[in-house]
Image 1 (cartoon, helix red, strand yellow):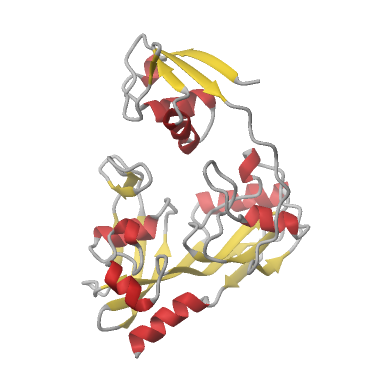
Image 2 (cartoon, rainbow, N blue to C red):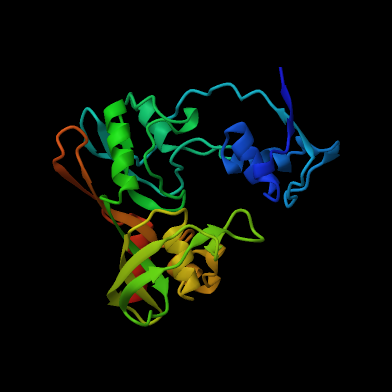
Length: 305
């Protein structure tokens, strides 16, 4: 049965966008709240709500929450290679085209689904669709990703990421040549003001810090080593785009389609090459590394030729 709810606008949410307010009121993700609005399942004082609507005092929200879809059996994920495993965590080499976990609107493979299909018991902690997830990589980003297997692992790994004791190293091929060739980008990131699917450097965003240094310069592009001090969604992609040096192949953030075609890229050239964490029970350092997948290696070869 569909769950229908009527909710008054609390004083503390007056002026907020409707998706932000619904996320707070219903305890769901902002993406899920936005999906409900887009599907026409949210009304404000009897009128279908627009995604850009900001709440006013005295308004009432009517929300239809459809029944969750029946759970589907997890399916194996080709190319999902285990890099490390113990009783508390497992690290995988995530292929491109694989999401970290199930989400509304995503019907493709996921890391969680692949692990469960392989018989790996992930931690039953966290939101139902994100159990075991302590950090994420974009669907179009490949490389090292760690998942918690135990409650202890989940709690401690979340702490490590929150306290920024994890060392996250990426390689990124960006268009052009950055000046200076080594530096730090400190610029707040939040939702793009006019495109919900994108993020941007905005004054009211969350503090975001990216360190980079040049590894190799090519005629049209530069290979960078990037270290993240924070872990915002699309952080490297947004910061590089803000510098006017988007990741090669990243058409969402302004990359040149002609260069992407020349390099044979169908996604952003971005790879999580190294992750350094502490084993949750013993505190011993664990260093996890991943090699370039074929599409990224091929793009570099084309640049060098």
